[in-house]
Amino acid sequence: MAFRKLWTSSAFEGVGDEASRVVIPIIAVSMLGAGSWEVGIINALGLSAFLVLGLPVGVWVDRRRRRRLMITADVVRMVVVLSVPAAFLAGAMTIGHLLVCVALISVADVVFTTAHGAFVPSVVGKDRISDAQARLQSAASAVAVGSPSVTGTLLSAVAAPFVLVTAGISYALSALALRSIKVDEDIRRAREHEGFWLTARRGLSFTVRHSVLRGLFLSGMILNAATMFGSAALAVYALNVLGLGPAVFALLSTFAAMGGLVATLAAPAILTQLGIGRTRILAGVACVPVVALTPLAPGLPWFPALWLGVSAFGWAFLVVVISVAGAGIIPRIAPSGRLGTVMASNRLFVLGIMPVASLAGGALASWIGVQPVLWIWALLAGVSAIPIALSPMRSWTNFPAGFDSSSLD
Image 1 (cartoon, rainbow, N blue to C red):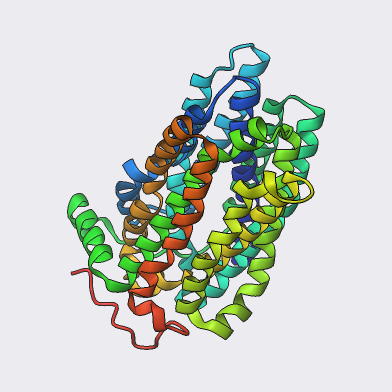
Image 2: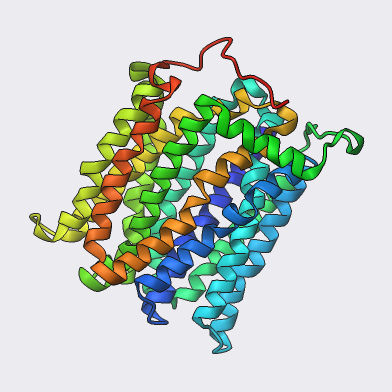
């Protein structure tokens, strides 16, 4: 019952994230005249808190009730996204306001994501983490299949800021689902805590020195850097270069959501057939031709929007397969009392690179054009397979029994 409620909360939270992620750049480009540089800044701010606050929040999460933190993060994001349509009605919507909103959402995202990752073992236990993560990913993908369609329809019917009301409602429903969960959380008593920065340093050192975690975060860093290079250029490429309308561009997210959903269904069979290591390596390499369909779209037969949809489907499919292939590794390696700190250390690298890459992608797109940046996206995605190929994970079929996870101390 507790996991079902967590599943429901995660699905609603995913809808809120999807709506705000898609709609805010559309508002910036189509209503406020933003270009690649401004979109890059928006994307960077959306993840900047993972770089600036990720590690301290991880230590903090290990010392607080995770469910309570997640509820607070949902409520903060609800209020922030609803401020955009309110500002539009008041005639006060500006790029500056959007940037503040994105920054606040970013902080709440760090708290929610870190607390969520540490909360899952309290709900299902360590032995079921991989299965639970796959089911949570499946829920998010399934809901996201319908979310872009609703977003696209609303964008055709009402002004873009009003579409963010759906995000506000989704965050509220996520918070309500979390409120009803009753589980015992593994929280250290105050007198058992080490010094704050000593805990942070040990978690960071453990992540960097552990051969498996190092390969995992290096691969994730490169893949996410590729994602942000693409995100900085994609909206401008689709809306301004290819001339797609905002509603059509939003509906392209449906293809990505479908790819993610299919991936959650196919990933167990793929992992059984190929194993963890080969799945991550081959999926990373396959990203190159899949992403290349986007910059090649104008020269391919039929409609460019079709190829963008196919590329979005394939990209989401491969990213989810890669994610599922790595799910459950960190909780099995890190001690439960410091899980939040170790997961935050991993995210410091994996998500912390994203704002930097977003700014770099936006700047490059303004300098050399959007299509070359899309090619960089494709090449970087392929390079993400290399750290896995050089780590012990390359030969893993499943998580090895008795693997030496060593100690933080």
